Image (cartoon, rainbow, N blue to C red; front, top):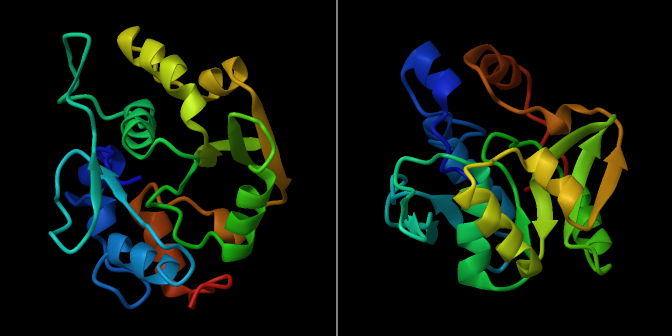
Length: 197
């Protein structure tokens, strides 16, 4: 998921965080795709437009739903809806700003998702990460209603559907890069790839 406005980073340094160099690559996007491509056959960028170049496979956000213009909406609900509508199968979502999440954690999410729950979501020390999860297409009608009603809080959404959580303890692998100081801190330390190549 990399279609967000990256508003905090934009205000701080004038750059979308997805474009920041990371892990020896020219951007977080390139790092995520390169480090995950050995483990997954299909990797798609969820975005509003092909802002990361033509080398990647995109799933673009739906621009209209029931005569509602969604072109200016930056919300994870829209990303989930657009991807699941296009793919129509269980899908693992990873936020672009969580580059250290381990392959082992992703495998645990996928294994747990084999149950019949509509959502399998990462929860670290009680904190829910709804954009690091596996979702089933059966949530599409719920997402559609949320978007129509202009409701976009995924934690509220998770309470309304059949959700199971992968509980784990805090670790550096779950760091979100939300501001420039977090980005600098991660980059200053030697990057532990947590099982990625």
